[in-house]
Length: 165
Length: 226
Ligand SMILES: Nc1nc2c(ncn2[C@@H]2O[C@H](COP(=O)(O)OP(=O)(O)O)[C@@H](O)[C@H]2O)c(=O)[nH]1
Ligand SMILES: [Mg+2]
Image 1: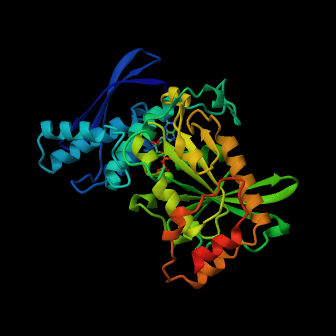
Image 2: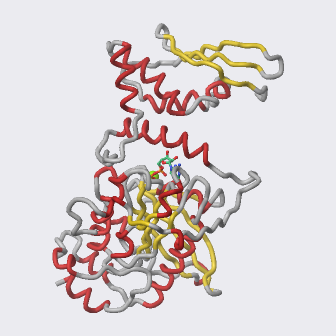
Image 3: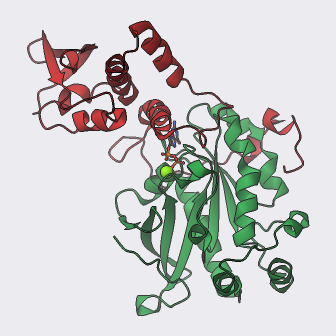
């Protein structure tokens, strides 16, 4: 543990199912490749569980943590689609669709796996914008007043049947 | 894992006031992240196995009064478009959340409010517009829902922390005020009527109570329990 790495590329292997990561070892500036098999992975396996297992894996964990969570889930999903007999083109298209966040899509109504994927996509932005204890500009009780900045009514209020609003 | 939900009517250990604060809103609006951001790592989650809910306890003081707050979070039950009655049972305040990047979550607020008011006609409710870090220009817009229902409104971000602590501290204060002023026996009635359909249609004409309304309780009890 502890060597600083930068993930450069990632991909999949189908037989046996594995995630492949090409990374730079910062200390030596050399590229390395690591193949991480998905153990006991079948067409019925849970994608987000397989992803979190890999992320918390004692040896492999550090090599996939540099990947956005949604990207790792996407790779694992592509492997599973293949196990289910889906063509690569179909799987890529399906996965692209899964990763879209649609302002009108009711996420109360989607299946748990799709919800988990959408949350992973959102999580990427969450982590990018996050201010954590230890960050220079972290403030526990950060208060900002926006009241005097309001210049317009949100367009969401001005359409459709709105008796409830 | 506990099987029995705490009773918020009993006094807590060493006489502190026990209150329950719940979060409502669509899947993925950030309810869990908001609670986590407020509590940082000083929390002790407790799983209620029976109802698949998570409870976070938080000890604080409000006006020299010792307060023990339980924040209730769902374990994804909002996916079924409504919550188990036990989620609302004895709640003293509610934080209703939408995602400023997804219109549908705003459009669904009336449904959540309606359900809340079926169980808790008059507890204070605060409205959180979350994820403003994604596009901070939303903060130049007004959202009528909160205004119309007399709710305090907060632009916030669980990610960068904007106004999260303020939101939760206000919710705690509102919960304590509600508990101290009200001689609310709705919960008792609820328990007795467990398998009973409450009349809820009438409530559509009622004015929803925001932070500062604890009056008119008798009137509302009658309309609800008749
Ligand atoms: N950018 C950003 N993302 C957020 C914020 N709050 C939550 N999220 C993301 O939205 C997704 C859903 O959050 P979660 O707390 O699980 O929502 P819940 O279903 O309402 O409990 C997660 O992926 C979070 O990372 C926020 O303030 N800003
Ligand atoms: Mg949640």
